[in-house]
Image (cartoon, rainbow, N blue to C red):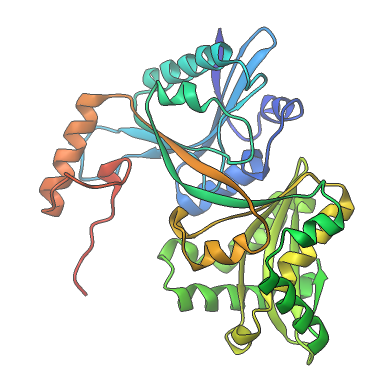
Length: 354
């Protein structure tokens, strides 16, 4: 069986995607942009055996300095989002097992210490196969909408509270507009305001260039939806992606001045209706913060009763090196490794007093 690591410019990456169900997180442009934000080298592992093939988008990352004695060690992780492994025959456990074994063998040959993959809740994947190869962790549910339903069915699946709120917003003069890119600076301000309000981690405070880079790398796959108040101000806004029939909510927020109106209700309803008219298959709203069943999850669940679990796959490829790195982390941080639910554990950020 043939297997190799591809760079984003390799035509084999896009050629493979043409023959399988996939999402924005699998596009070489998305992975390349993720590498700019998260660090690491954007790659994808590709293996084929006749008509059977797989592709895994990855970020190849150097192990943090100070944990290893002069050695250059690496691990690999899925880019932010749901860039799960893709298979030409995801329903065949035997085929998926053979391809995954080839992937793991190649990762070991590259000297990788660990592997961390985020599975896509809406795409078929060999979860049972993966659970027999490493550790499969369920993190909670994500919310999605089947856009192949009729408009009446879509409306009935929405909570009474959301339907009532949308009617009040429309009556008050709020309305949504799509792809008016002059509002992008407003979106950036509102998004950052929202992240500050909810106390988001530093990672989510993207540089302003990131949003322009999204347009450059994703082109027509990226959409901006804005909710305008009766006086014409942007009250809420969100970035959405559309790839292979899957509409994804990427980033968004609401302006502090309009929080009491919950204007994002109109935004999600508008994008749902737009996707349905476009003939798309699914609208993925995502889940709560860190997969938790929190207020964000409850808000999203008000649009649909369709829930799908989100999993991650964790694998230690070199146990001796992993144990050594974890021991170095313990010594440097002064914290015990026991009980840490983070993978790889040696990448957990040490908290300091401020």
